[in-house]
Length: 299
Image (cartoon, rainbow, N blue to C red; front, side, top):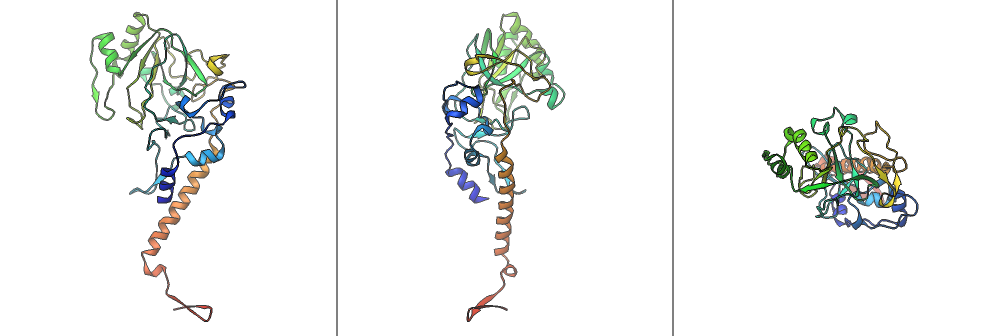
């Protein structure tokens, strides 16, 4: 386990994206991109050697080896930040908290609550997204209003306050959401963005900008609005309903096959190391031996 931890610490967080990566995400003709250009990585599009270098690692824990899913340093990958984000499309941890421009197509990720479970009340009157460069799927912001946190929007649009949540150091306004989006629409906004609402499993080191389309009533679905795909949203998108995440035909979130192999191999190595450590602590596990004329004699 410690070997895995040390190896991961020695590995750089930066991922080199080869020229083919952009073509796999955006389609033929897309220019090459770098790790600095993306907020999300389609992990299965990386060469298997890169996958093995940048997979989450195991650390010792009281209940057994635990997989570290949150980045340990800037530029690292955040795995499984919540149930609505693809496991094989980890987000990049960085200080960037930029909002998407108004009247623009911006890259997003979106999970379909209706597939993962019953739609929550905060997506029956709007649709929520993460702003995520590198996803290859675009939503249109329209006339947008940017706030730091949910409470700032409630105070501005409704003149109401929301409770502060200590665990995320943020404000939650779930009960006010239907009223909030209606008020935003009356003011002529098509969307609202939150740049500092850090409630993911990896907060506060990971805090992707939230984008809320206030005119959508099907946020619990995979296709709550019109999407585009291709480099700079140059192509139309056919979104397939009933999927767990927003999608476009031709833009895939590939599986990360090295992930399963890594988990199995890491768990086996961790068990072997635990047994070795336990064995060396017990004299019974190390029988007395001595050599005599090239033969091994027990006793």
